[in-house]
Image 1 (spheres, helix red, strand yellow):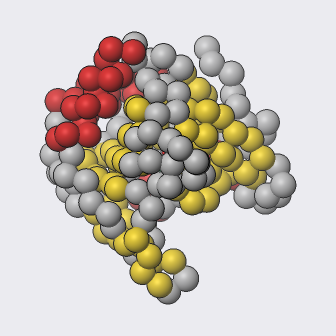
Image 2: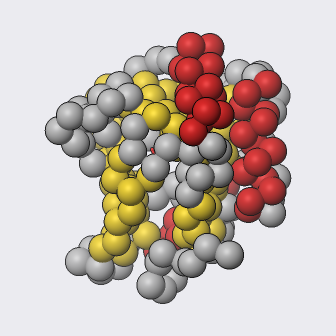
Length: 192
Ligand SMILES: O=C(O)CCC(=O)C(=O)O
């Protein structure tokens, strides 16, 4: 069993090498090529700002997801995503019905500090996050005391499972990095 990387208030487990190197490369290529990536704009402090990465949303029919002024309608699951969803479900012991995909084209693409605490995910959501492509840093800070920080490198083929109070009590981000190759992240979630 993996160790909890949070010191208190929530659980985040890191599983390296869930995919071997060959499967990781294959999934990365297939998902990159078959996904209709888009650069969406989100509303931050009343202004529409383009997200610094490309995204796409998949899921069961009718499971829409809203964040930062966006309302996403799911595309139908692909075989590759269903295979990764099955793996995520066996590692996390939960069933997922949507996935948010992020494509970081290079080190300038990033994800700002946020919590995945949208009401449609429930109070203590379980989120499984697959990493493909380049390794990137994943930073965490405690929501109540932002000086309490933690970080982990998300390696290709790894899975991060976040649960308990990890979304109410902690924020996370993927900071910019000088010189990074492309990376795909898939977060499987359950809309209730
Ligand atoms: O790219 C990652 O590892 C994190 C993605 C993330 O935080 C999100 O989709 O909410």
